[in-house]
Length: 156
Length: 275
Image 1 (cartoon, rainbow over the protein chains, first blue to last red):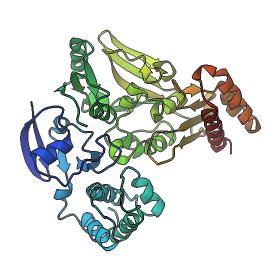
Image 2: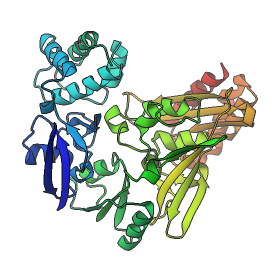
Image 3: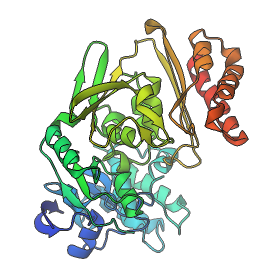
Image 4: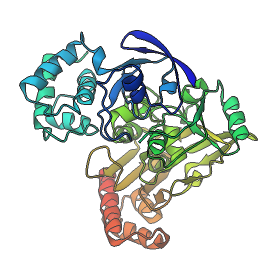
């Protein structure tokens, strides 16, 4: 067991974890933050994407021990975020999800694309979403929802 | 799947990391971004007894600039290179390559040194750094040593990095202002590993031209004849030169499909430079 202290969604958490525990399993099993989903567990599907120190990261490819003294933001931590608010509303309006398994990772990734100014065209959005797999929607509605949310929330 | 049981330690310096590596007698692996290593552990392809986390060592995230080169610490992330947060010696080639590497959520954690240490034949950095004639500095129990990238990568997932050494930095010569480069990564889906990868650099100011193929069934393959054709701007002769270079690389055992992919990728990349 290794002691870790990290900030999750604005709250400082101290815990002892086995080094093999991924950040995703730490969030889900230890903190009951089950909004972070685990699909492939090798970095390809994007469902487990969270923010680490403000940047998107695969929580399946990060060990919880390596997140000591870092800030982690999960989908549960965005209640007051204006970009996520616009994304959530547009995902709803444009039917950009069906089963919802990929949605937390899609939202975290889409928020980052918008804030970095990488959501200004369909092509750019599709490139930016290449690391997030959705097996329901065929992506069209997700791309539309992100494009609309990007128009509402100019980056910066 | 889940990673196997492992011990973890975060040393405070490179020297300490090297001591730990030596004590572990081959049972330890150095972890930086972990974007390949943790995936390999989750897939149970790798099961080190001890992880030595070097990602936050200031010595390994530092960047320094000289008049003719930039030295990047091994733990500089792909995203930092993509975003231009570190000095770019390559007139845009390295940021371009970084942006094509996997996905943003991987690039924010994965490091240039980690990519070199693994040297996946389909990876971007071994080919790009070979094309830029970069040098790799290693640190081990007997001190520091520096190798050309062309010597460092020896084969498929094979390098000169000893089990008790750590990659410290990568030194990339600066391209002249009028240098040109071409880069093409062929893959069926953005961000996945390349099916074919070509990098071309031509820098008349320094009398340097090089055409390199990745995904080359071994270390990045320097195409000597094609490099000469680029240096002399003999655009019409590119196809023949690449084919000849591939004939001379018979030990790479390319099948007909790979050979055609390589020829097309190399030709398109050379065209970016000679246009």
